[in-house]
Every structure is written in C-alpha cells, then in structure tokens.
Image 1 (cartoon, rainbow, N blue to C red):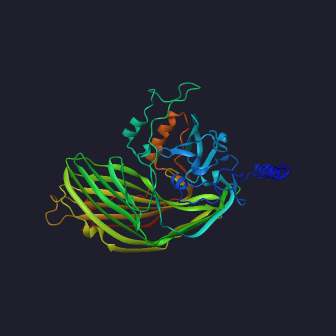
Image 2: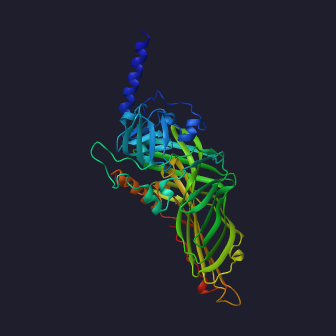
Image 3: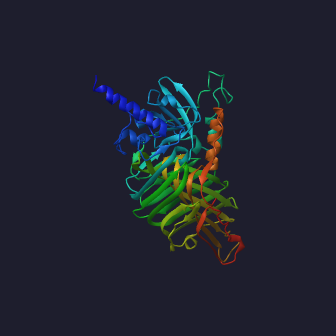
Length: 490
C-alpha cells in the first residue's frame, strides 16, 4: 500500500497539471499504439493520443476509448451512438466539441440518452476550433492502400422530395414534444462498413446510378434513364503514384502557416453520351456518398487522414424533343497541385502542364433534331485533417473541371452540323470546410426537427477559385448556334 501512494499522487499531479495547461489528459481507455487499419480504427477512425506539443481548445472533449466507444454512426455522418460510460462522455454538452476519433469530430448540436448509449448529433468545425497550439507536418505521404467509406443512403444524397419524406416529423410537426420529451429522430440507416481498396463502389444519388474508384485517378461514372431522357458518362482526374506533403502551424487558435502539396502528374479524362425522346432537361448536383481515405496514423497525437471525395453536376440544354450527342476527351493538366499560406497571404503552387491528348471537339457526334447542349462539372477534393463526409476540418485542395458541349440541329445545317466545346479547370483551396448548398439545405431541414440552429455551409479561410485553364472551340468558327456557355467554376 505504501508503494501505491506515490504512484497515485503522481497521477493526480499529472491530471491537475494538464487541467491547468489545457493539454489533453491521459486517457486510460485510449490506445497509444493503434493500428490505423485495425478493426475499430478502420470502421470509426483512430483515437487522439495525448502529446506534450499539442494543446486543444478549452471546449474540446476527448471522449476516451476511440472507435471502441462507438456503437454506430448514421449514414449521413451526423449522429454518433457512443457508450455513455466512455471516459469523459459525461462532459459532452451542446456547444462543446466532441473528439472521439479522427472521423468523429464536431460541434455538439443535440445530445440525448438512449439506454446505456448517448446519441450525439454534431456539426462541422474548423481545425482551429479543435487545436489551439501545435505544429502538424508530414512529408512524402504515399496515396495508396485506400479505404473506401460508403455513406450508404444519407439524407443529403437524396433529392429534395425524397429528403422531405424521410425527414417528416413522426408527430406531424417539427420540434419538441415538451421539455422532457424530445421528438424522436427520423429513422436513418447506419453507415455500411468500409472496404479496403480503390475498386469501384456503386451507389444511387438523386435518381442517378453512380460508381467511384481510385485506380490511376479519382474517377466517377454516372447513369440516368428516366422519362425519355438518358445520360451516361465517366469523368476522372488522373494521376500516377501521387504523394502528398503538408505543414500546418497553429498558434493561439490561429493558423500562422499552412502548406499542402500533391504530386503525381495530373490529367483529366471524360466520356459521355446523352439522348432525349420526348423527355425533359436535367439540372442535378450529385454529392457522391463514397470517399476514399488514406489513414496516416497520428501526428503529435492527432489522428489524421488524407481523404478524396467527388461531386458531379449535370445540366442539359436540349432544344428539341429528340436527339443524341456523345463525345470524349483527355488532356494532361499539371505535374503537381498545392498552395501555401503565410503572413496572411495565400498563393497557388500548381505546375501547369496542359497538353491535349484526345480532342473532345473531334470526337463530338450525334443526331440532333434541334440543338443539344450539355454541361458537366466534376469536382475532386483532397482533404487533409479530420474527415468524415460533410464533417471535415483541416487543409483542402479541390480541382473542378467543367466541360460544355453543343451540337447544332441536323435539320438546320444540311451541309455540316456545327459543334462547340468549352473547357474550364479551376482550383479552390484553403483551410476549413465548405458544404454543397443542396447538402447543407437538407441537413438544416433535419436540424430544424431538433430545434437546432442551422449550420453555416462554409467555414473556410482561403482565396476565390484560381483558374488553371480554360478554352473554347467552335466548328465552323464563329457559329453562334454552337457557342457553349462558359463554365463558371462555382
């Protein structure tokens, strides 16, 4: 017993010291040498580990146990079911920041107990909402051995009508049923288990069948066939054995220096085919509910990952009730992508290397009975930090490629059908998060059921989008009919 007293006293003094300095207290349920590809870490993310060189913000609650404390997470990624007996789970409260794993980080918006579990609904945070002081850096990260995280059928990937049906209040009205009886949450499925590897993962988004993969690039396929309108295509940001490096220096809750670089020889490849027969025009944003993550382990105790996600936006401008159009193209883009931030100033670091490999306008063909116009935008986003679908915090770099095509009416041009293409590539980068407007709109509808203040769809520090390349080509030259709308990059 005498030998035990000094040990207990030492532990008490250590806990008191960490409470005074704001540093992370020791977690008796945490794992100091966790395998990022272990079962619980793979499913829910790695646990944070205390480190003397890192200070968290005062309202951050490090819930002990990591992935072992997590029972499940909903498909939309917003509500985490955790063990109510997990260390420091009792400290959670609306307004606090929950940090249970690298994928379970967010501002607590709603908290309710169900048996021996806590249902914690969280919203987005920025990296400086979590970290007050620390320098996180790593060089030469191989972007290989990815883990595909599937959201399943999250509410934010539904079209607005479907989302309204899912989010209908069980009582017929939104809000609470009284001070002690919170309205039950709408039924939402749990996320499927992740799959290791970069093979194609299929899903359905807003009546589109989609597939995403990470082999030789970030590629998405999409297919729509409904009410007389058909559209199929593939878009890819290609790369070859990419590697990433980053540096993030935070002092006093502000970013003083940030750098992110991804090298790998980037290019763009796409193919599409569309047709209409007494159909309708489309305007759809497809937030693909699958992301690929490269677990990195911990950096000064902080679990980080490099995550690659994709979005497709489709707009058709079919000027007749019948016709077809198809095409494909490919070009090299850049040797590396990245940016730097210091002294309050951002600067892109993009080694441009544009070269056309396969001409889109030469491949453009079809049988239009009226003008056939199509605009497709493909976004590929790299996030370095805490990341789980719409809940991301850290550094990001997004490449947005938009290609518009127009083919004139075969009835109006007996000698030659005019063709036009417009291509634009933009980079958006910075620190923080952005959520697609339709996604944020659906999420906020859900939060209103809980009487929770809507989330801000953007919490980022960064400049406006940076144009990497743009071009327009019309054959025959000057044909107004086949001029294509210039992509905005928004």
